[in-house]
Length: 458
Ligand SMILES: [Zn+2]
Image 1 (tube, protein in one colour):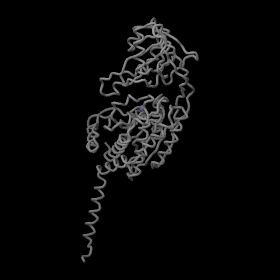
Image 2: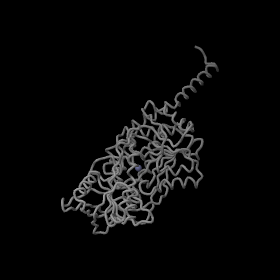
Image 3: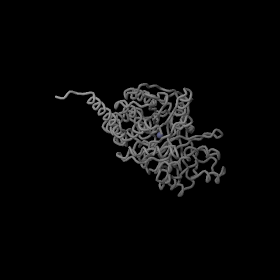
Image 4: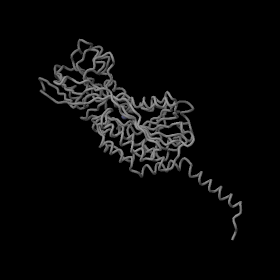
């Protein structure tokens, strides 16, 4: 029998080192991340809990605090080294009762499916009744002027342009009617506003959302109407321009209150003071389970922590999962997170936001250009086996946007977005509309991108 010489030992050590390096090649790590995510149901269970047990979690609600507590525990269970809550000042608005009906001498009475806009003023407890003026743009509103608008309900009825393939761009072309419409109509003395739901869907769900009153206008009551009822109202106005609408909104604004961002961190092995953030927003509209918008993005972010922890991937930089509070109303969660980071002198290398729904993963949008964008796009090769190919220029998201002033590379997670606005801000955005495989493909994509960014440092 041959004895082992020092040369043999050297050979064995070399072989061991080679196989260890082999095991650490990005493609094998990414394969392990996808396999673990696609085989595991933790994120899906979290999604079910948040959607079913904390429904109604608008900022400032007790349901939002339930979601805060739940995700704090989930981040601990996921294996984060540190988990904490960060105080955020949030609005406190309550929806109350909401009713609207067409009253016409020609047609009689017909109820409309409506929802008060977030932060809207209410009507008196008796409600109001007024004639209706349909408009499609702020220019048209200005042309009609005070003499036509004063005392009337302005009905903004410009639909989303469905020919635009990027559904977010289509949405962006119509959403100012909701965000600024009430404020603009108030300038001409309108009594109230009804806005066509900003959605690609033709259905009977009102799609909620926030409105913002300019400081120099009187806040007037404002609601969205379902797209089906917007069509009915428009037709009714053609047949009977003298019809009126009876509107009752008992929503109310209360003084601001306190809520929290929820943060879980894995500390970096080499640069613990340098951060990569991944997040979604925990608040959602109170008429919705908020599954795609954005409990899905939150559970994907928690899952990133679980994947790193479970697979023993120790990043060089610290990785943080953040459940931002109050994206939907006034965005104070994202601003509070960046303000704290600045105060502590933290270095923020990159931030990824998942707030475009949790359908099948497609890729990422990078707020970068030139050489840097090309380098980031070269990372797409690692995602080829998973059919994830869209590595384009684009924005990150509103919660991470304030981190840009700290130099953080802004990255948006991009799933298939064609169906997103069917669900967005409505009672239709339920747990059942989320596919576990698509959800987890997204978690794996984000964990993989963070792993690669941490290695390459582009
Ligand atoms: Zn959202």
